[in-house]
Length: 354
Image (cartoon, rainbow, N blue to C red; front, top):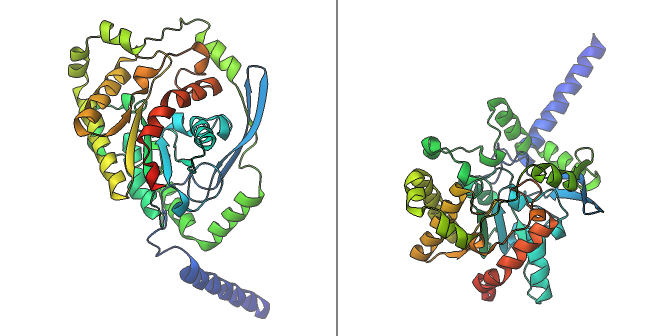
């Protein structure tokens, strides 16, 4: 009994020490604690193999301590940010071959000392981008980007017009919708010991999961072998589509989308950044009528509000091998997009601020 008592007292003493350390050094009362947010998007490492055009690419997809894609860096060092869904995230290709990677190479080639940091999150729409400001960016000390580039449209075309204004904080899984998981994520984000263990694992362990192999050649073949590649360019869309009718059919969706655009512009300005909006296309181009009318409405809205916008939907002349699933671009597709938007982006960037 005496031995058990000693063990029990030592156990209580250890718990007390842990409790005191947690209170003193943990993030329980820290206003910058991520809490229940960013559960899937911080300190991540996943190994991938990409097969395409006879080439094999082995690479590691990383998200750093603050949730951004790529290597570790402090929020104060971020001057330009690229925000979007999975088409911006581009986790299934090496970083240097993504849209952002290509843009950074072009900036470097022009001796412009600026690196665009990728903040893409799979599944996010403009609603998720708005949530980023209150649940993610707000938590970053000394976070003062000069420009935020929003790559938007594809996920907003899927918005349910009858459920638009209910505000989903789980958009893009920035928060797990399950209450049990939300509590668990809050505890993990607040604990100094758990945070330390994650930092050690992130620094020294190669990957969180076994290597995943993506055969883009097979994906492209399966997507298009029984389907005609039917890309409608912008000029033909203006001739073939009834724009007035599309606007009337999608009025709720358009209004909601443009309201979010206004709020994103305002939120960017509040952190001292200039917003730049770039619209998107899928493999059928402007045949995707919901996306076409969002793109069309965005550009009209930008002109009316004097926002900075790039009309990729108008510029893009697609090819079959630019897409591997009709939505996400291949290496060729990402390079083409970076080529199409770079000159316009360069003209819009406030280079004097960098």
